Image (cartoon, rainbow, N blue to C red; front, side):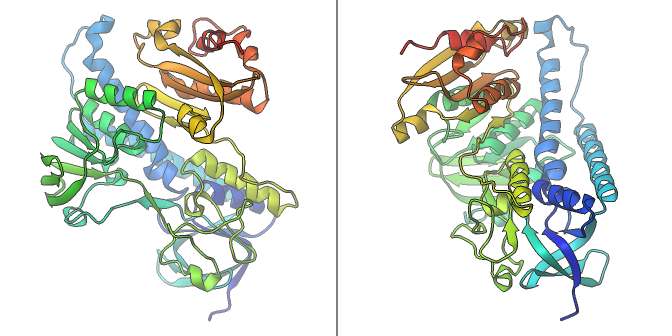
Length: 459
């Protein structure tokens, strides 16, 4: 084996937690390197979170044009230019990549572009994208390889060359009929997006409801939203076979009949990127789903090796991956921080949005947690009326014999922003009465929280 180059910190994968660790450690004068095979900065700024929200906003703009008459805007004729939509997204991605490169330059962390795999404990062999190879060793090694869209073993699916979110976000045309396999977050967001661009869209979900882990009132509202926008929703439906080629013509045989379209998009979950990187030679074990085994401090089964983000089984959100960075950094620098008990807020970026934190009603019942429920329709939020968007609701769970906020869910405009207000109150341990009695700006969406918490049933 070639004598390896030595680093204080060696990171495999350049997603949020890994790059933040490298930049932080390198800025302290230590030697840090990040090995990345393709996407500088990981999937979020390149092919996932930010590009998808870029496309979603373009689709919302198209929807505003489509319904301009309701706002007194005279329609003079318009069309969706998907090449221009894609170029706006690409421009944003290029700008984000340059921001990342500048961070590497400023911090002194080294970015090594190539395919890395373990050949010994804490030692990587990197097949460089530019040719040749390097052998790198880290006193501390962090695995941050992320995840990818999962393709199941449905006969004919792989052969049909289906889109994943990566290819869907880079289309330069509007699919005539897009069939979306999966009614989770990604499937629902992209179904609405391409419907608003002008596609005929069918969503096929094997479970009995879309985003089926949410409370029933949320899943019902989301299904109604898609149906109202002209999307064909087929829940409780299993695909038996796929024929044809996505981008030309595809035919899906399901247990409820055949579905024909021009494109098929796979959005049925994620698979960790842990195969083929030599984990066994590093002494790093994985679980039955392929995630790297970690403890509550994100330490793997190998001494001096940590794992973060999707590949470690953390909830698949960039903000959770960024918290993984904080957990590892604190533990590397003599502190003690764990992942257990942390808040996991999330937002579904449909229009309008769904946002949630803490306990939902389904989980509370499953855990036997008693609660008081406060819920108001979006019509009670005056700002929603000014936007002509009164679909949805706010709801909160309050402990039965106290004033602590157990959970909050919003379905409506700016739900993700309103969520942050409640989250801060929960972090601070404030009683719900603090928001009930707060002087909140009128008219804002957050003002609806005063109305919501005024409706909490008495003990």
